[in-house]
Length: 319
Image (cartoon, rainbow, N blue to C red; front, side):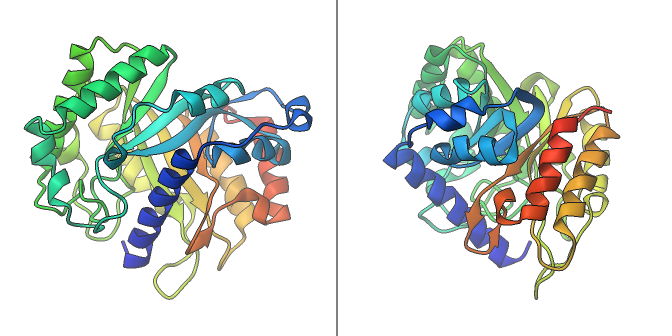
C-alpha cells in the first residue's frame, strides 16, 4: 500500500481521537423529525456531531455506527457517544487500536503484539472490558484491524509476526471473558489483499475467538500512485479467502468508500449495492463518510453520488 495511504490512516485515526476528546455536538430537532427507518446492514463512520446531517441528507439511518479508539488515550468505552448513536437506533462498532496515532506509523516498541500477549496492557484492557460491560447494550469490537498491512504498529512491522497477532487477540479476548463481558461481538477484519500482502489465514485467531469477519477496501481512484478499481477488483479475491478461512462467519465490509478521480463514482456506489445483494453471506457494509487530507469520501460531496446512494439505500441490501 503506498505511503500516502498509510499517512491518511494515521490522520484519520488522530482526527477520531481529537473528536472523542473534544466531545460531540447536538442533534437538531428538525433532523430528528426527518429520521427514516433503520437501514439494516448499513453502517457509517462519521463524526458524531455530523450524524444527524448525514441521516437527513442521505435518507439513511444506519444500523451500525463506527468509531475509532486508540489505546494511548487510556479511556474507557465511550458510552456517551454510543448512547447518542443508540438514540438513533444504531449499534456501536469500535475499531480498537493498540497504538498512539501521534507516534511513528510503523515502529512503536511500546505497542508490539508480543507485549500485549505478555500482559503489559492487562490493567487497561480489563478496565475497558468492565466499561463495555457496564454499558450493557451490544457492542462490536474490531480489534487491531488491517493487520496484514504495514501501516500500523500492530501490522507486519514493529517486530511482529502472525503468531504474535493471534496470541495478542486471544489474550485480549480471554481478559474480556475473565471480566464476564457478554455484550461484545468480536470482528476480525484484515485489509483487502494487495500486492505484497501476506496470506490472511496466518493471522486468523480461530473460530472460538471470532464472531464475525470483515474487510477494509477502498477505491482510491486514479492518481500517480493508484488506479480506479471496481468492487470485484478490490474485494473478490479477499472475499474468497475469508470464505475459505471462516466459512460459517458473517462478513462485513468494515470500511468501504470510493473516490471520484478517474471514474463514475455514482455508478460505483450502485455496483457496490448490487454486488452485496448478490452475496447473501455479506451481512452489511460500513461507509467511511469522512474527509481526510488525501481524499474526500463523503457522499454529500457529490450530488449525483448522494442521489444514487439514497436510491440504493431505500431498496436495501437484500434482493
